Structures are given as structure tokens and as C-alpha cells.
Image (cartoon, rainbow, N blue to C red; front, side, top):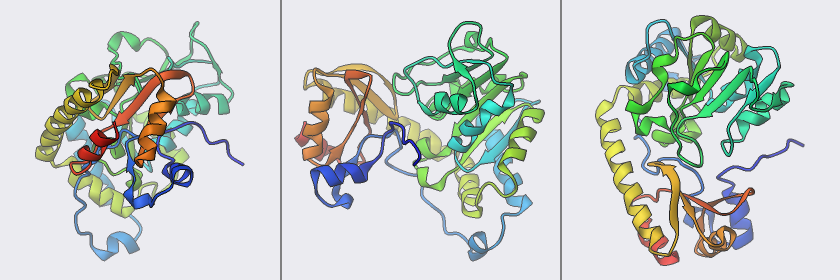
Length: 311
């Protein structure tokens, strides 16, 4: 049986433990935008036909414009950033990988699965999650000093001015983008790698033909062309993050980090607070390496009163 690593989500297990109907739970354990991009009406052949080249080209063109991808770098669309993370260690012979912790644990698992050892001394590969999950730490270009450097920007669309995508044309640099977080459509399973053409070609060979579904191509294209929605969403996320900080710190918690899609709080007893919220059918995220950290995503507009009551 596959080993399931610690992540946000897992709402079914919370429902089984604390009761209630799944539809009545509020899942704040992930950093997914609770106000998702509105899904457009799709033609039937988007579902019934194999994705065509024109749809793939349209998506990549929109992605290049949205993220201001530099000349000399190419883009690969994939069925979620996770599928790329699992394959990235194959881009170089197994050696030593430096993955600053705490961070998203799938990166270390992927490198270990491909025979790499983990350590920060004289690394052959480095992974930075930018901004980091769960601390929200942002890096700068000084971190890009290792032959294979992976920059996971799954949450970076909240602050495009801080992106490191401008370095994606450098040999050995791979920038990852996740569609599920900022646009709130995690179930669509759409992610991107941005790197030099030879790196993109190698990853494309690993994914095979038609890696992205027709609906994901169409919805992704429309969303990436909608700059007005993106700007309004950034403003709303920032305001809601401030509102959440004010609400939670009134309980005595401290803000330990995060970004506009999730907030990290220091509390006396993270497990106890998670249990308190779960009794109100609100799921949160705690971490096996910290008794004091609790992470909350943002509530949807109609959920704030329930969170306030639970706290």
C-alpha cells in the first residue's frame, strides 16, 4: 500500500472522527482560494475528443504572457504540479539534494524515491518553495546557486512581482506553477514547468502525449487571459488574510508566517485547537514536527461567522 504523507485535506477522515455531513464541513486545512475562478460553459467535444494542438498552444501562449516568461525558456503543461515534482529528480544523476525544511514534503520524497540523498553540504540539486509552505518565506536570486535548482512557485501568484520566473532561461533552473491554489480549481489538476527547451523536452517525454485534459486546457486558457480577475483576487486575498489574522490573534495566537492564501499561527496547543475547531466541523492543519503551529486557509465569504463562533 502506498505511504500517504502528511498533507492538508483529508476531510473524509475528519468527518469519520468528528461526525456531521461532509457538505457541512469547512476545510481550512489547505491553501486553496475559496472563491474559485468561474468555470465557463464547455463545448461537448472538449470532453469527447482528444486534446488538439491548437488548444495546447493557446494555453501555453496565455501562460507565457501571464507569467512574463523570458525568451529562452519554454513552458510545459502537466496534470498537476505533483506529476512534475515526481519526475524532476530524473533531470540529473542521483546525488545530494538540499531541500530547506520545514517545507512541502513531496519534494524530499520524490528525490529519495529516485536514489538521492538529502543534505545541504555541496548539493547537486536544490529545491526552494517560494513562498514556502508553511512559513511563507520568500527567497531571492541568491538562492539559485546549485546546478539543478527547482523553484516551486505554487503559491507565488499572490505576488507576481516577487516571482523568480525571470531566471527560468538559466540552465538547470526549473520553475513550477500550480493552477489549483490561486485559481481555486485544485480538482482540475493543472500545473506547469518553466525551464530551458531541453529540460522541457525531457519532462514532456516523461509525461507522454495528451498529459492535460481538454477541459483543463480550455479553463486554464480562459483563466490565464483574465488579468482583471487575477488583480481583483489578489486584492481580496490580501484583505481576507488581514481579516483572518485579526480574528485569530484575538484568541492569543501569534502570526508566525504564511502568505495571502494561508496563514501560520503560533498557539499553545495546536492539536487542542484543531480538535476544538473540528467539533464545530472546521478542519485545520497541524504539523507532526511542531506542537505549536496551526495553519489556516481563508474561509469563503459565507463561512466567517462559523469560524468566529468556533474560536
